[in-house]
Length: 395
Image (cartoon, rainbow, N blue to C red; front, top):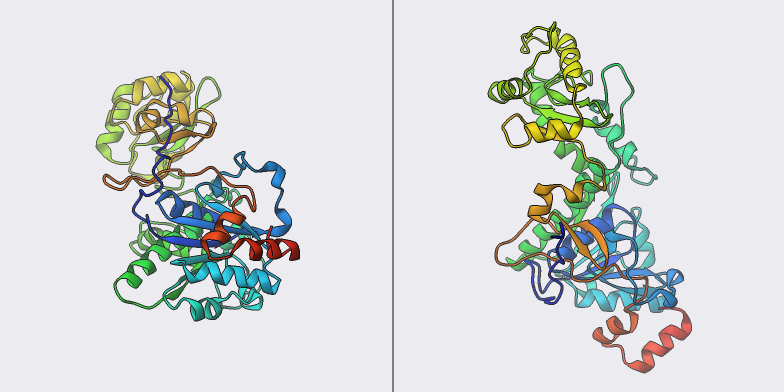
C-alpha cells in the first residue's frame, strides 16, 4: 500500500477560507509560502507574475516550485499603466493582497495600500519584509541569516565553543515570516467580517522571530537559560537532549528531558556500558562525561536497530531521517503527512480540519497560465484582453 494519498482536489469549494479571494504579487520565499498556506486552506489565490517570465510553451504541466501550489497565475507588467489597471481591477473584488517588495515599491508602482484601499476599503493588505516597513534597516536588503542575527536567535543555535549555525531558512523566512503573515491576514479578515475596515498587515521577519523566541527570553529571566550557546537544556547542551551517531554512521535523536522518560531510556538501552557508571544527570558539570558514555553506547547498534527498540516507548528517541526517508516513515505515512500530487511527493496541507478540510487544489502554475481566464472574471472583454496583450501589459 502506498505511503501517500492523493489530496482532495475535485471540490474547490472546501477549506475554512473557501470564498476568500487573495491577490498575490509574486515574490520569493516567505511571501509565496504565506500565499500557499492561504490557498491550502481554501482561498482562491491569484498570483500576479511578471509578464517577462511568461512562457506559454510550458502551460499544462506543473511548475516545479511547490511553494506556488494551489493558485492561478496572471502575467502582468506592473510598471505599465495598463498593468496597474489590471491589478486594481483584481483588487476591487479581492479580500486580501499579499506582497513582499521592499518598503515603498508598491507605492511607486501605484498599487500601494492607499491605491488599493481607494478601490476596496475592506481590503486586507499584507506586507512581507525582513526588517519591516520602518526603522533604520528598512530600506536595505537582507536575508534570513541577517534577521536571525539581529534578533538573538542565531546566537543561540550551535555547539558550545563553535560558531552559530544557520538553521536553513526555516526559522526566519517561513516560521517568523510567511507563517506570521498568513496568521496576520486571516486575523485581519476575521476583523473585517466583524465590521472593521480594511487595514495593512506589516509582517516583518525580525518581529516574527522575536515572538518565536519568547520562551527562551522567559527562561533567561527565570535563571534557567545561560547566554552561551550549546550549554542549555534545549540547545544541545544536555546529553539527554541531543543527537548521537550510531554504528552505521546515521544518527538518533534523544529528547528524554523528564526523569521518567530518561529512566525509560536507561531501562530499554541497558545504559551504561561497562566500565561506565550511572552519573547524576542533574549536575551540568557531569554532562560531558555523561554524553561520552551515551555516545559509546549508541555506537554499538545501527540507527534503525535503536529505532526499533525505542520508538514504541516513552524513551523520547527517534531516528534522524533524511528528506527521502521521512515521507516513508510509518507514522508519517499513517497520518498522510506527505501526499503524492501531480506526480510529486510533497508535504500535505496543515493543520487539519474536521469539517472544512484543507487540500492541494491545483498544481503550481506557470507564470501567466491563467491570464485570460482571470481577466475575464475581472470583467475584461475579449477585445480589451487582446489590446492588453498587444501592448505587453499582460502575458
